[in-house]
Image 1: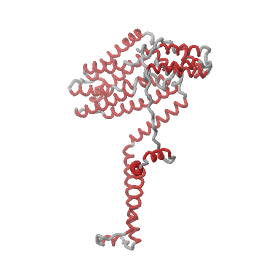
Image 2: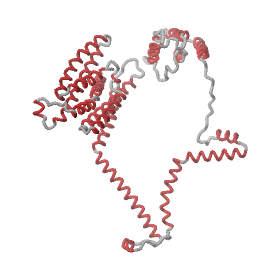
Image 3: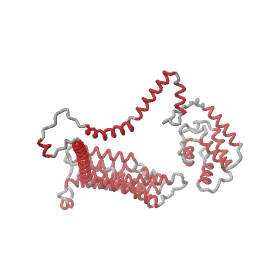
Image 4: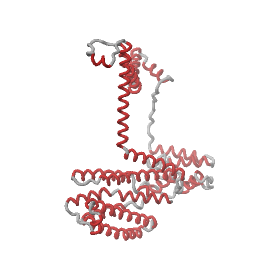
Length: 464
């Protein structure tokens, strides 16, 4: 529970901090129009050197802080008063309105712009309150993160082309914080989802799994941070490795050249080479062919890995052409398919005519009658449940192979009647499969009743 509360608070913090670039953009653009007033006397005396920058950053931080507090209070109210939506709405409004008034006053005093105070409060404080009644893993999703990155890029570009201070350090810091927290949130929520995938109740993630996973994620984040912080040193190291490799290759080629000249008796000292005239055209040493060895090796590797498919296609075309000229194309094709040494085999697929809705229902009823004739047993229950999920009463594509029995029941509740048709079957399934207490005595009759409901229901007749 403590970890889930921490994840919820972190997600709400990301929702609030994601509006920081928008606040900086609006305050900067309004400041260009001369609407930024002086700070209060306290701030003027203490922060005279960074006066203009704080007039942008302090209101942005204040609005985000108020937004975080309001969202946290609204989530707690909605979580505790789930059964009383009207009362929860009234309490949320009672908490949000004074906070919004405080935000308007603070932004107006810090920036001197009433427009910024009203608009930023309305957007940053009230808009993120939507969706707080949902699951915490939906508070800051991939769409929210993509929108945040888009806002960062667009606001920075607009400030750059408007020739205004971009505050790149703050942009980078906020982006790094939100990105790290987003990755941690996605990682931990995915763990919770995997652990509770086949569970009736909310199960806590085992501590050893959570600890190991956090170590891996934080290790990757620290590695990325180290690469970013020491990018100049790493770039210098890569350049040094590049120059060293180039010198090594040049030295190897020079050694091969001197070896070839020495074996032919044409080896000269450095002084003789400097005083000697360039060799006449036409002189050639066969030992220079040694240089072709690495080139040939590289060419063979490229041919083998990249051009082998072309070679196979050309060889197959030539083989089919020869077989066609000989008149035994079909026989050669059959022999090629039967060969055990072939690289792959073509598979011939026979398409069967799709059954109509009436034929599917008739076939399903035949399987249902055969199922009823089976003796009561655990195998009969699971065979009947498989028959239940393949009933024609379901809409096409409504069920997926990855759906759990609880998800199947939820889909029935949402789109079919009677809504309690699968309740007893789902409970019996969980009792035997997950609780391991065996099937209840009424499991087979209740499953039979559910199958009868599906047999009588027409496909799509009760679909909402």
